[in-house]
Length: 346
Image (tube, rainbow, N blue to C red; front, side, top):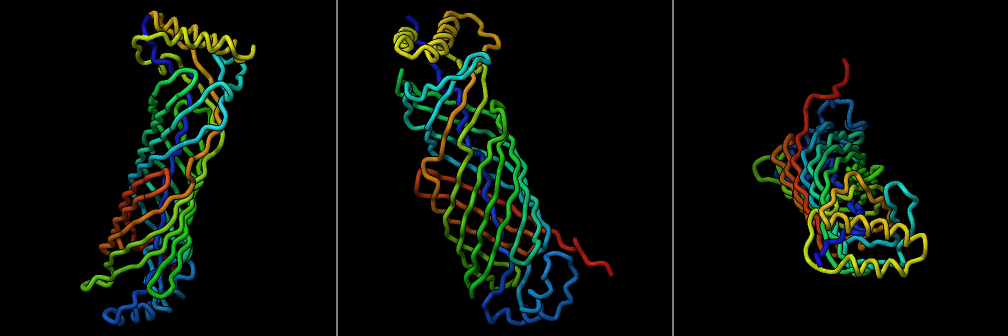
Protein backbone atom coordinates (compact mmCIF):
# COMPACT_ATOMS: atom_id res chain seq x y z
CA UNK A 1 0.00 0.00 0.00
CA UNK A 2 1.12 3.52 -0.64
CA UNK A 3 2.11 5.54 2.40
CA UNK A 4 0.24 8.86 2.56
CA UNK A 5 1.77 11.87 4.29
CA UNK A 6 -1.35 12.72 6.24
CA UNK A 7 -1.88 16.38 7.10
CA UNK A 8 -5.08 15.72 9.03
CA UNK A 9 -5.70 18.21 11.88
CA UNK A 10 -2.69 20.25 10.83
CA UNK A 11 -4.57 22.90 8.90
CA UNK A 12 -3.67 25.29 11.66
CA UNK A 13 -1.90 28.66 11.60
CA UNK A 14 -0.14 29.20 14.91
CA UNK A 15 2.00 32.09 13.87
CA UNK A 16 2.62 35.12 15.98
CA UNK A 17 3.80 37.88 13.75
CA UNK A 18 5.24 40.50 16.03
CA UNK A 19 7.57 43.41 15.66
CA UNK A 20 9.19 44.66 18.82
CA UNK A 21 10.71 48.13 18.56
CA UNK A 22 11.57 51.01 20.82
CA UNK A 23 13.28 54.40 20.98
CA UNK A 24 15.76 55.76 23.52
CA UNK A 25 14.73 59.41 23.66
CA UNK A 26 16.35 62.41 25.30
CA UNK A 27 19.98 62.06 26.37
CA UNK A 28 22.17 63.88 28.82
CA UNK A 29 25.72 62.58 28.60
CA UNK A 30 27.67 62.92 31.84
CA UNK A 31 31.03 63.69 30.29
CA UNK A 32 33.04 66.90 31.00
CA UNK A 33 34.32 66.72 27.42
CA UNK A 34 30.92 67.83 26.11
CA UNK A 35 29.83 70.07 28.95
CA UNK A 36 29.94 73.14 26.70
CA UNK A 37 27.80 71.39 24.06
CA UNK A 38 25.06 70.51 26.52
CA UNK A 39 25.27 73.93 28.15
CA UNK A 40 24.71 75.48 24.73
CA UNK A 41 21.43 73.58 24.40
CA UNK A 42 20.08 75.57 27.32
CA UNK A 43 20.47 78.76 25.29
CA UNK A 44 18.63 77.54 22.19
CA UNK A 45 15.20 78.95 21.38
CA UNK A 46 13.58 75.58 20.61
CA UNK A 47 11.87 76.02 17.19
CA UNK A 48 9.78 72.83 16.93
CA UNK A 49 6.21 71.91 17.89
CA UNK A 50 7.24 68.35 18.75
CA UNK A 51 8.15 67.03 21.11
CA UNK A 52 5.82 69.02 23.34
CA UNK A 53 7.80 70.32 26.34
CA UNK A 54 10.93 70.10 24.22
CA UNK A 55 11.94 73.65 25.11
CA UNK A 56 11.91 72.78 28.81
CA UNK A 57 14.05 69.68 28.19
CA UNK A 58 16.60 71.80 26.29
CA UNK A 59 16.71 74.29 29.15
CA UNK A 60 17.71 71.43 31.43
CA UNK A 61 20.53 70.42 29.11
CA UNK A 62 18.93 67.37 27.46
CA UNK A 63 19.73 66.64 23.82
CA UNK A 64 16.49 65.65 22.04
CA UNK A 65 16.23 63.47 18.94
CA UNK A 66 14.55 64.98 15.89
CA UNK A 67 10.84 64.47 16.39
CA UNK A 68 9.95 62.64 13.17
CA UNK A 69 11.69 59.50 11.97
CA UNK A 70 11.23 56.33 9.94
CA UNK A 71 12.79 52.89 10.37
CA UNK A 72 13.37 49.93 8.10
CA UNK A 73 13.28 46.73 10.16
CA UNK A 74 14.12 43.07 9.64
CA UNK A 75 12.79 40.79 12.36
CA UNK A 76 12.89 37.02 12.79
CA UNK A 77 11.46 34.96 15.63
CA UNK A 78 11.22 31.27 16.51
CA UNK A 79 9.11 30.00 19.39
CA UNK A 80 7.15 27.02 20.65
CA UNK A 81 3.34 27.10 20.61
CA UNK A 82 1.04 25.04 22.84
CA UNK A 83 -2.30 23.81 21.46
CA UNK A 84 -5.12 23.57 24.02
CA UNK A 85 -8.15 22.89 21.81
CA UNK A 86 -8.74 21.80 18.22
CA UNK A 87 -11.98 21.88 16.19
CA UNK A 88 -12.28 20.77 12.56
CA UNK A 89 -14.90 20.74 9.83
CA UNK A 90 -15.19 19.69 6.21
CA UNK A 91 -16.34 21.90 3.31
CA UNK A 92 -18.23 24.38 5.49
CA UNK A 93 -19.88 21.81 7.76
CA UNK A 94 -20.31 22.39 11.49
CA UNK A 95 -16.98 21.99 13.27
CA UNK A 96 -16.47 19.34 15.93
CA UNK A 97 -14.08 19.21 18.87
CA UNK A 98 -11.33 16.60 18.42
CA UNK A 99 -9.07 17.80 21.25
CA UNK A 100 -9.47 14.58 23.24
CA UNK A 101 -8.61 12.32 20.29
CA UNK A 102 -5.34 13.72 18.97
CA UNK A 103 -1.99 14.45 20.57
CA UNK A 104 0.57 16.99 19.39
CA UNK A 105 4.29 17.06 19.97
CA UNK A 106 6.36 20.27 19.76
CA UNK A 107 4.86 22.93 17.49
CA UNK A 108 7.39 25.53 16.34
CA UNK A 109 6.39 28.85 14.79
CA UNK A 110 8.92 30.86 12.77
CA UNK A 111 8.45 34.42 11.50
CA UNK A 112 10.49 36.45 9.01
CA UNK A 113 9.24 40.03 8.69
CA UNK A 114 10.23 43.18 6.81
CA UNK A 115 8.53 46.32 8.07
CA UNK A 116 8.51 50.10 7.95
CA UNK A 117 7.96 52.03 11.16
CA UNK A 118 7.19 55.79 11.09
CA UNK A 119 7.43 57.37 14.53
CA UNK A 120 6.99 60.69 16.32
CA UNK A 121 8.27 62.02 19.65
CA UNK A 122 5.10 63.54 21.10
CA UNK A 123 6.82 64.32 24.39
CA UNK A 124 10.52 64.14 25.31
CA UNK A 125 9.75 60.86 27.08
CA UNK A 126 6.97 59.48 24.82
CA UNK A 127 7.37 58.09 21.31
CA UNK A 128 4.42 56.78 19.27
CA UNK A 129 4.76 54.75 16.07
CA UNK A 130 2.99 52.70 13.43
CA UNK A 131 3.99 49.35 11.95
CA UNK A 132 3.35 48.26 8.36
CA UNK A 133 5.00 45.34 6.62
CA UNK A 134 4.97 41.82 5.31
CA UNK A 135 6.86 38.57 5.33
CA UNK A 136 6.44 34.85 5.75
CA UNK A 137 5.26 32.59 8.53
CA UNK A 138 6.08 28.90 8.91
CA UNK A 139 4.68 26.31 11.33
CA UNK A 140 6.45 23.01 12.00
CA UNK A 141 4.05 20.54 13.59
CA UNK A 142 4.62 17.10 15.12
CA UNK A 143 1.56 14.85 15.41
CA UNK A 144 1.89 11.94 17.84
CA UNK A 145 -1.62 10.45 17.64
CA UNK A 146 -3.64 9.07 15.83
CA UNK A 147 -0.66 8.71 13.48
CA UNK A 148 2.88 9.92 13.96
CA UNK A 149 4.44 12.32 11.48
CA UNK A 150 5.87 15.80 11.05
CA UNK A 151 4.87 18.49 8.62
CA UNK A 152 5.58 22.12 7.81
CA UNK A 153 3.26 24.82 6.43
CA UNK A 154 4.43 28.18 5.05
CA UNK A 155 2.28 31.22 4.25
CA UNK A 156 2.61 34.86 3.28
CA UNK A 157 1.64 37.43 5.88
CA UNK A 158 1.00 41.17 6.00
CA UNK A 159 1.08 43.06 9.28
CA UNK A 160 0.06 46.38 10.77
CA UNK A 161 0.08 47.81 14.26
CA UNK A 162 0.52 50.70 16.67
CA UNK A 163 2.84 51.18 19.61
CA UNK A 164 4.32 53.58 22.15
CA UNK A 165 7.56 53.85 24.12
CA UNK A 166 8.09 55.58 27.45
CA UNK A 167 11.69 56.54 28.29
CA UNK A 168 13.55 58.09 31.19
CA UNK A 169 17.07 58.61 32.47
CA UNK A 170 18.61 58.19 35.91
CA UNK A 171 22.09 59.62 35.82
CA UNK A 172 24.08 57.73 33.16
CA UNK A 173 21.44 54.96 32.94
CA UNK A 174 18.37 55.13 30.70
CA UNK A 175 15.19 53.05 30.80
CA UNK A 176 12.77 52.32 27.94
CA UNK A 177 9.36 50.62 28.27
CA UNK A 178 7.85 49.66 24.91
CA UNK A 179 4.35 48.32 24.18
CA UNK A 180 2.60 47.57 20.89
CA UNK A 181 -0.28 45.73 19.31
CA UNK A 182 0.55 44.07 16.01
CA UNK A 183 -1.99 42.35 13.75
CA UNK A 184 -0.94 39.56 11.37
CA UNK A 185 -3.13 39.02 8.31
CA UNK A 186 -2.38 35.43 7.22
CA UNK A 187 -3.74 34.23 3.88
CA UNK A 188 -5.56 31.18 5.31
CA UNK A 189 -6.94 32.82 8.48
CA UNK A 190 -10.38 34.44 8.59
CA UNK A 191 -9.38 37.53 10.60
CA UNK A 192 -6.02 39.20 11.43
CA UNK A 193 -4.39 37.63 14.48
CA UNK A 194 -3.38 40.20 17.15
CA UNK A 195 -0.32 39.96 19.37
CA UNK A 196 0.56 42.20 22.31
CA UNK A 197 4.27 42.79 22.90
CA UNK A 198 5.82 44.51 25.90
CA UNK A 199 9.45 44.99 26.84
CA UNK A 200 11.54 46.77 29.44
CA UNK A 201 15.15 47.74 28.74
CA UNK A 202 17.86 49.25 30.93
CA UNK A 203 20.91 50.61 29.14
CA UNK A 204 23.87 52.94 29.03
CA UNK A 205 25.14 55.22 26.24
CA UNK A 206 28.88 55.56 25.67
CA UNK A 207 29.74 58.91 24.02
CA UNK A 208 32.17 59.33 21.15
CA UNK A 209 35.41 61.19 21.87
CA UNK A 210 35.12 63.19 18.65
CA UNK A 211 31.45 64.09 18.21
CA UNK A 212 28.79 64.88 20.87
CA UNK A 213 26.03 63.59 18.57
CA UNK A 214 27.70 60.20 18.18
CA UNK A 215 27.43 57.39 20.72
CA UNK A 216 27.19 53.67 21.25
CA UNK A 217 24.49 52.18 23.50
CA UNK A 218 24.14 48.76 25.09
CA UNK A 219 21.22 47.34 27.04
CA UNK A 220 19.59 44.31 28.59
CA UNK A 221 15.98 43.67 29.43
CA UNK A 222 12.94 41.40 29.30
CA UNK A 223 10.41 40.74 26.53
CA UNK A 224 6.81 39.59 27.02
CA UNK A 225 4.33 38.44 24.39
CA UNK A 226 0.72 37.25 24.43
CA UNK A 227 -1.27 36.25 21.34
CA UNK A 228 -4.96 35.84 20.63
CA UNK A 229 -5.99 32.42 21.94
CA UNK A 230 -8.26 31.36 19.10
CA UNK A 231 -7.47 31.20 15.39
CA UNK A 232 -9.99 30.20 12.71
CA UNK A 233 -9.69 29.60 8.98
CA UNK A 234 -9.79 27.05 6.17
CA UNK A 235 -7.44 25.64 3.57
CA UNK A 236 -7.97 23.55 0.47
CA UNK A 237 -6.96 19.90 0.42
CA UNK A 238 -4.81 20.62 -2.64
CA UNK A 239 -2.68 23.00 -0.58
CA UNK A 240 -2.15 20.68 2.35
CA UNK A 241 -1.37 17.39 0.63
CA UNK A 242 1.73 18.17 -1.43
CA UNK A 243 3.16 14.67 -1.59
CA UNK A 244 2.75 11.03 -0.65
CA UNK A 245 4.87 7.96 0.07
CA UNK A 246 4.50 4.30 1.08
CA UNK A 247 2.62 2.89 4.08
CA UNK A 248 -0.74 1.98 5.67
CA UNK A 249 -1.78 5.34 7.11
CA UNK A 250 -5.30 5.32 5.62
CA UNK A 251 -6.09 1.95 7.19
CA UNK A 252 -4.81 3.10 10.58
CA UNK A 253 -6.85 6.28 10.38
CA UNK A 254 -10.03 4.41 9.53
CA UNK A 255 -9.53 2.17 12.56
CA UNK A 256 -9.02 5.25 14.72
CA UNK A 257 -12.10 7.02 13.29
CA UNK A 258 -14.30 3.97 13.97
CA UNK A 259 -13.77 4.55 17.70
CA UNK A 260 -14.82 8.22 17.70
CA UNK A 261 -18.18 9.60 18.87
CA UNK A 262 -20.76 9.99 16.03
CA UNK A 263 -20.22 13.70 15.26
CA UNK A 264 -16.43 13.42 15.22
CA UNK A 265 -16.59 10.18 13.25
CA UNK A 266 -18.61 11.75 10.42
CA UNK A 267 -16.14 14.58 9.87
CA UNK A 268 -13.11 12.33 10.29
CA UNK A 269 -14.43 9.82 7.76
CA UNK A 270 -15.11 12.59 5.23
CA UNK A 271 -11.53 13.81 5.44
CA UNK A 272 -10.08 10.29 5.41
CA UNK A 273 -12.11 9.41 2.30
CA UNK A 274 -10.77 12.55 0.63
CA UNK A 275 -7.25 11.49 1.59
CA UNK A 276 -7.75 8.11 0.03
CA UNK A 277 -8.95 9.70 -3.22
CA UNK A 278 -5.97 12.04 -3.31
CA UNK A 279 -3.64 9.09 -2.70
CA UNK A 280 -5.24 7.42 -5.72
CA UNK A 281 -4.48 10.44 -7.91
CA UNK A 282 -7.95 12.04 -7.91
CA UNK A 283 -7.91 15.84 -8.01
CA UNK A 284 -9.49 17.18 -4.76
CA UNK A 285 -10.52 20.46 -6.43
CA UNK A 286 -11.59 23.13 -3.95
CA UNK A 287 -12.39 20.68 -1.17
CA UNK A 288 -11.36 22.34 2.07
CA UNK A 289 -10.79 21.57 5.72
CA UNK A 290 -12.00 24.17 8.23
CA UNK A 291 -10.28 24.62 11.58
CA UNK A 292 -10.41 26.51 14.84
CA UNK A 293 -7.76 26.21 17.53
CA UNK A 294 -7.02 27.61 20.96
CA UNK A 295 -3.33 28.19 21.44
CA UNK A 296 -0.76 30.04 23.54
CA UNK A 297 2.96 30.67 23.52
CA UNK A 298 4.90 28.12 25.57
CA UNK A 299 7.06 30.78 27.25
CA UNK A 300 5.68 34.35 27.26
CA UNK A 301 8.91 35.82 28.72
CA UNK A 302 12.51 35.84 27.51
CA UNK A 303 15.61 38.00 27.96
CA UNK A 304 16.84 40.50 25.37
CA UNK A 305 20.29 41.97 24.72
CA UNK A 306 20.94 44.80 22.30
CA UNK A 307 23.10 47.65 21.06
CA UNK A 308 22.84 50.77 18.93
CA UNK A 309 25.31 52.92 17.05
CA UNK A 310 24.19 56.51 16.57
CA UNK A 311 26.33 58.06 13.86
CA UNK A 312 24.64 61.44 14.29
CA UNK A 313 21.16 62.76 15.06
CA UNK A 314 19.97 61.59 11.64
CA UNK A 315 21.24 57.98 11.40
CA UNK A 316 21.02 55.12 13.92
CA UNK A 317 21.63 51.38 13.49
CA UNK A 318 20.16 49.08 16.12
CA UNK A 319 20.37 45.32 16.66
CA UNK A 320 18.89 43.06 19.30
CA UNK A 321 18.68 39.36 20.14
CA UNK A 322 16.27 37.44 22.33
CA UNK A 323 17.82 34.67 24.40
CA UNK A 324 16.83 31.92 26.85
CA UNK A 325 13.33 30.54 27.25
CA UNK A 326 11.46 28.85 24.39
CA UNK A 327 11.65 31.85 22.08
CA UNK A 328 14.61 33.23 20.14
CA UNK A 329 14.51 36.43 18.10
CA UNK A 330 16.72 38.80 16.14
CA UNK A 331 16.08 42.39 15.06
CA UNK A 332 17.99 44.75 12.78
CA UNK A 333 16.72 48.34 12.62
CA UNK A 334 18.01 51.26 10.52
CA UNK A 335 16.47 54.56 11.65
CA UNK A 336 16.59 57.94 9.93
CA UNK A 337 15.34 61.12 11.62
CA UNK A 338 14.24 64.28 9.78
CA UNK A 339 15.39 67.73 10.84
CA UNK A 340 13.35 70.86 10.18
CA UNK A 341 9.85 69.30 10.39
CA UNK A 342 7.06 70.43 12.72
CA UNK A 343 8.52 73.92 13.12
CA UNK A 344 6.52 76.53 14.97
CA UNK A 345 4.87 79.23 12.89
CA UNK A 346 6.30 82.67 13.34
